[in-house]
Image 1 (tube, rainbow, N blue to C red):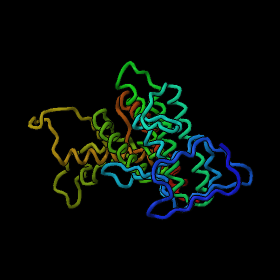
Image 2: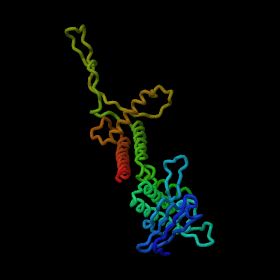
Image 3: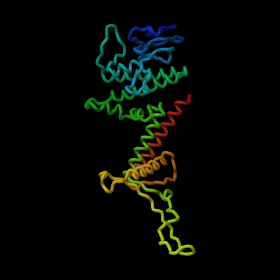
Image 4: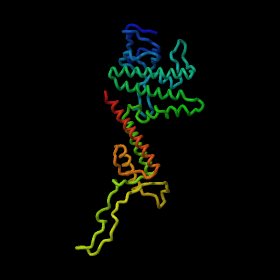
Length: 322
């Protein structure tokens, strides 16, 4: 269908222009033409196959996706995304068609591609109007659609495989680490989780102080010669610094070998300090691994923490570049 001239939908908060579902699908907007939804309820509107970057939205109401118990994750979204979750993959609704229809894998892929394209065009539309918060919601919607599209491509032989693909793919990892680069607070929280986990790993794999991190013994422990004011020579004490080695293994809490709470806290603080030296890119560290496993754990920590810091900086730049 083609639209020419100036087509305007002007509603009120009470009726929103549309009483039910509205299908703006496969509409081609002619040159120098406009479609202007204004004060319109678009919670049940589909724009599949329509270039919505050319539409002018004014004070419209989109479907809102809620996350149970996490209000900060609520976002504006497309009704088509909700329909896909319910298994409704109709591209359009011919007269008299009200139920769901079985979709082939190709039709499902085309449906998800259509949703992603609509989200991408909405991002461009709202960024052009400097409505960046709404554009961010639609950007997250596009990434969520891509993540679900991967699950739709999954092999059906094992029922758990689609869920594993949905959350175990690169899109799922990107969601967990920084909500697709849109939340620097979530990225910072994940960095703190990484620091805690890597510190715990070093406690078990073992680490020790380097030569730079070893503290020399107090001067009072050094040998004092007999002389004026001294009645006898103090036995000589080896003043060579001894590096501290930390390596824990599981023992029963009542075992004599079990560390006290104070010792455990002090060693964990040292382990956290070790990990923070990685996060702050220090060249000379006060601690080093004592085993091959610890060295591999160090390499993994360097890659993971450096990547997470990059995600934090990317999310901050994305938030404040505008």
